[in-house]
Amino acid sequence: MKTQTTAVIASNPKNCTALISPKALLISIAATGAGLSSTAHAALDAAQVTAIHTDVLAYVTTAVGAGFAVLAVVLASSIGFSLLGRFISKGANGG
Image 1 (cartoon, rainbow, N blue to C red):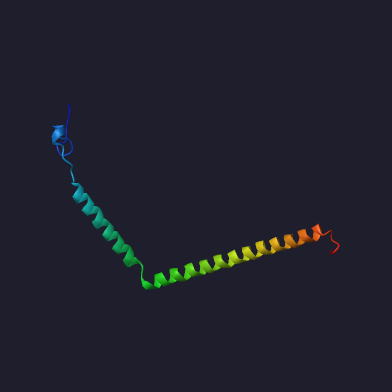
Image 2: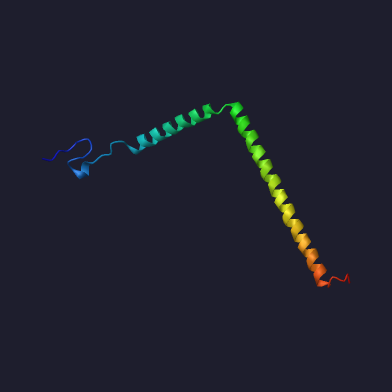
């Protein structure tokens, strides 16, 4: 015994219509997105934004300081090995 639901399966494939139109689908997606974005916006107040801003600036300051420290070590070692190479190439006799 076959049962068919007429709302989902049409008896004639040429008369198949979508259950929801593309325009209605687009409108529902846009409305859902607008609702979610307004909820997310309302969840961030000025105090939280300031706290996040302060934390991000602290992390950036730490990263920049670490970057300069690595740069200084690399530059110092490069200069040191260059001077050592010159010293060895002159035969360590100063001339």
